[in-house]
Amino acid sequence: MAPAPRTPKNEKGLEGVVVARSRLSDVDGAAGKLRYCGYEVGQLAERCCFEEVAFLLWHRRLPVKDELVALKRDIGAARDIPQPILDLMRASPRDAHPMTVLRTAVSALGAFDLDAEDLGPEALLGESTRLLGEVPMLAAAWHRIRNGKDPVKPDPKLGVAAHLLWSIHGKRPTALAEKALDAALIAHADHGMSSSTLVARTVTSTGSDIHAAIAAALGALRGPLHGCASERVMDMLIRIGSPDAARGAVEAMLGAHGRIPGFGHRIYKEHSDPRAAILESVAVRMATKAGETQWIDIARALVDIVAASKGLHPNFDLYAAPALYALKVPQDLFSSVYASARIAGWTAHVMEQASDNRLMRPSERYVGEPPRAVPGKP
Image (cartoon, rainbow, N blue to C red; front, top):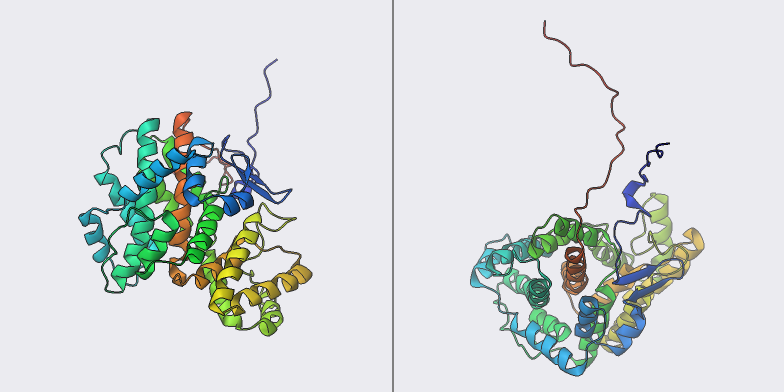
């Protein structure tokens, strides 16, 4: 007896559909936990630097001292951006969104990488390392270019977090600011099969190069429902203005049947996003140091009001926005900072996909017109 034909699972937005097996991040929505290769993300943010976490995602173990030193050296050596890429950025409209320019620059970088067509593990690891040096540099370079300044001269001795802040502001960050951004980068390094990660793995599954995969992921992260959501959170906090106005603002948003930025997550339904606590801590430390706590105070007021009215928990955007704002990162540069962190996870997924590849070709359910004949001509 022939087996019954298998009916593909049909879920809008691919919710709950498993598309890959991964050894990278474990997104445990039921428990409200996020682990990278078995380690709790909160512990990693407390005890590790971002480069250690990048190594962990690439090798599935934490580095020993000599390996960490070598990785930092290699990332630092990759920060020199080819002049034609900088010229391309200078030719971009000054009002272009930073993510649009970053996506274009990363795509163009593929033409300058001698290993671009090599999908072997050694070549992909080298390209991933270079991208971790290049992408934060590109993100900061565009901010300076659009303001009529030259990009800073790369300093190979600085870590990713310190160099990113220095490249944006043109001055060395404090140890507190460096540690705060380091924790934020770790929280953003990977998050399972997010939309942008799925895109990166899909492009890799076709046999395309890593720059194409990362450019595609950047395009997905550019969307307001993904990486750019934190910009909307900061808009909301600024519009509300004070904790006393939070309740009225929530009522107005709900009355207009609108979403409340910074709340709700498809995976974390019964718990807060575990990354939110990391970003809240960063925001509190930096805002307290600067004497500007109103944004984090508004965010905290919103948590209680939204929980009572809608039963929703905060996602990482609610605290990521005031955290980066307290670090003096321009609001429209938030997503580029996230991308600088997510390079670690995206490239890890590219390497994992390439190591045991099968072309991604999902099914669809046709719901159009029934079979019919083309009318004959008179």
